[in-house]
Image (cartoon, rainbow, N blue to C red):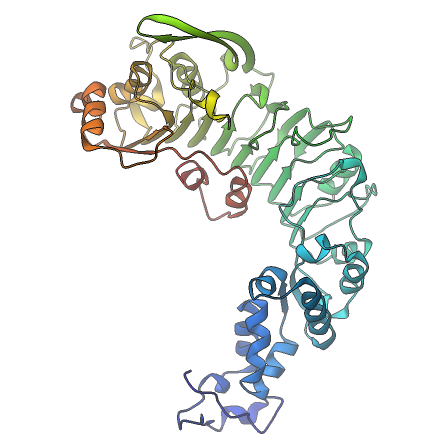
Length: 508
């Protein structure tokens, strides 16, 4: 409304408010105040925290709606409004003191980082938060100090265990109580958290409704075993190698029995140098896998590890004009044993993969694959990036065709393409043999991010022989490769509405 409505005489917003039309100072009707209290409350709850408090000045009915509606308190909206941390402390305390409605969502990250743990504990005990469903304590905040000196999770936070649906915490340590239960928890995200192996498995056992589990740079446990009839999304990353590392870090992830698991995302951060083993014993509904990289020292698929990929060291020659100009020792994942296939997987992301034969071995493991993302390398060092690119080791065996190339693969994204002969030969695998391909995105890596010239693109298309492509419906696009934002993938995974989070992460 363009004009401010008059305050309604009833104050509390009773049934009489629906019998009389309020008039604004400009003569217009205050139609919003005619809505029932339950609808007003739902509107206020969905507003950002700062705006939800501001609507109280519109009318006494809005004041009643804000104070009695489920509380949605998020310090990000307060800080965006220009509030200092001192003022933010006052705003949060005042809001909790005035609010009479139940708590729905609480996110207080920056306040806790400011060193106000005493006030934080006091807020968590507030009756205004009774029945809290969403709790976020420094969500997505990685461990920036020695993990052994992390502060504990505020004890009052555990009082919400019976009602929580979403719990996202970062940079703290979890208690060792193995009997902790979250009967209604659907999403658990731990970022930079220290937790013992017994405590972690105890918490997982106490979450019978868990659907999403994110373990991002956590420490204190060597192994994670997943046996859950409800979990749909699992994302794990190893602890940041630049931080002071404790003795116990994650070394193995085992998916023992996860009948409803659809998204399995072993991802890594930009400077992570640690590695772990990944075993997928039983995940009959798996649809998305990645990012598979050198961070996974050993990948086992199938009961009895009938398919095994392992990272090995090899020497790479860098050739220019037919001469070896430099040599590099690189670790790369190679197939050790091929047996089990996962016919349910539709989306696969591979990093540090630059050879034709390596890609072909992966494709044979996923016969119904539809979307493939391949990155030749993801090292942040520009001097190393300049050497990275696709190689054409091995070739496609047409007498032993790959099922997904023949029948299913519709989308391919290549990251780290440099336009050299080896890159062209690698890309031809899909141009010549992907018979139902619809879109191939080639992301060109260069130090200069100007507009790709029409002549350069036409030259690449000519070298790729796109006119002789196996799929006449395929389209090819060339874009700049700006690299990945390694902090975004966990957020994409949290969005369960995305069937393929790589589509936004790899192609940004």
